[in-house]
Amino acid sequence: MAELNVNIGNLPLKNPVMTASGTFGYGIEYADFMDISRLGGIFVKGTTIQPREGNDYPRMAETPSGMLNAVGLQNKGADYFAEHIYPKIKDIDTNMIVNVSGSSIETYVECAEKIAELDRIPAIELNISCPNVKQGGMAFGVTACGAGEVVKAVRKVYPKTLIVKLSPNVTDIAEIAKAVEAEGADSVSLINTMLGMAIDAEKRKPILSTITGGLSGPCVKPIALRMVWQTYQAVKIPIIGLGGISNWKDAVEFMLAGASAIQIGTYNFVDPTVSIKVIDGLNDYCDRHGFKSVKELTGALNI
Amino acid sequence: MKVTGNYRLHKNYCLLKLTSDENLPEMFPGQFVEVRVENSPTTFLRRPISVNYVDKSKNELWLLIQLVGDGTRKMSEFRLGEIVNIMLPLGNGFTMPSKEQKNKKLLLIGGGVGTAPMLYLGACLKEAGFEPTFLLGARSKDDVLQLNEFQEFGTVYITTEDGSLGEKGYVTDHTILKEVCFDQIYTCGPKPMMMAVARYARAKAISCEVSLENMMACGLGACLCCVEKNKEGHNVCVCTEGPVFNIENLSWQS
Figure (tube, rainbow over the protein chains, first blue to last red):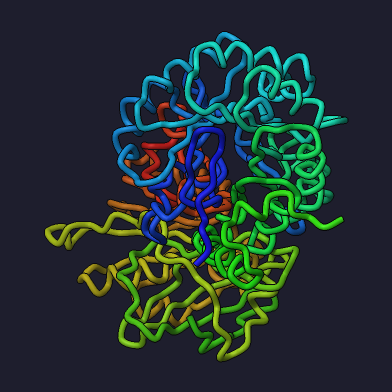
């Protein structure tokens, strides 16, 4: 048995395997299928200070080895989360991390302040990379200046572990990562979805109500892996890698590229228990290769 | 579950019979399952398929598949003995009338592959002592599926768009709707058909439940892709709040 525990800043994880925001609900939706407390963490659905209805249907389109989504941050708002959802999830024995989104610096700050009051939420993931909302979201995440500004403002009001989720829809992701590190982020998670599009040739119409949407799933994995590797060269803070992970081998690859922990997203829809299989597979891999701790994998790429 | 039957009912439809070694959990009419199609990059997500029939004595589940794309085509090629990964049961079923309502006149309207859940609903209603009436709509007589099975559970009326079987036209044109005053309607089919049925039910003040088939990914209420607007105008997940809705709880007005 290898040691599987890792740290993201000051936040200890029992293992590096977590589930990505928007793909695992609030965790409880999956409790019938698995022991969710075995996970290193659960990133719950994107939360905004005000409730959001999200985008119109249709919101998804399947693609080869992946899917596009355009949910648009549907959620009932931070107050509803605190009053109705938090009580149901606060005693789950893993790190429950809230993905925080906004449409202006003020709304990011307000939402982070609200979530900071919740004792059993040890970290937030600042979503500056959602491609599916017109205002804010990705607008902050595509320039180093915008990303730095929002992280600086949230850092002032949020004392716990601050993870910043980066957009792949940029020229140089490492530059954005450096900017958020400089403003005090404890960690970066990458990648969010890639902007894509699907068309119904017969109807000559876009499939998604928003025309464009976010691409995820195994099809984006090589891009995500490359971005984790580039970011690893550029920053000292721990990286949480995600993008198309569907088995333990993918998880190992992300860690070798420089990730300290990983998230599993879209593949939860295909196999709700995939994250548990990845935890077991990581352990077997470490044993097989003589690693005493999974931490030794981070950046252990032989070049 | 193991594939124990795969019948091509028509060039565009197949009936899969799947058997479990263990006792199947109780499944209610209107619920659905999510089928994984392995080793197919173009079929990344599971396919939501409604329960067509359950033979509890054999732990056998029937799925009626319309071949619309790569996923359903691959499902039609499942071989006997093959093990298929299925999540079940998912969603909420139709509301069964209470035992005191034995004389209630129940109409089950299915269109196209939307007839699938109506068979299991009819079977359960018959078992509970009701006498369901079926109204099935199809393009032409070859598209009318499982007619013998439906006739086992109740009276069947048919409409076809080309008039090759039953009355010509859409289900909402059928004369039975003018002749009999039903107390409850259950329906599943193409959305324009369900909306037309809902308009009819509203006009006659008949209680009506519809089973929606919005595109979905997770089937568990996590991804929020399959939403429909409820009567308050809020987006709700078809997979967990539905797929069966009373029309009064939806914002369908048009």
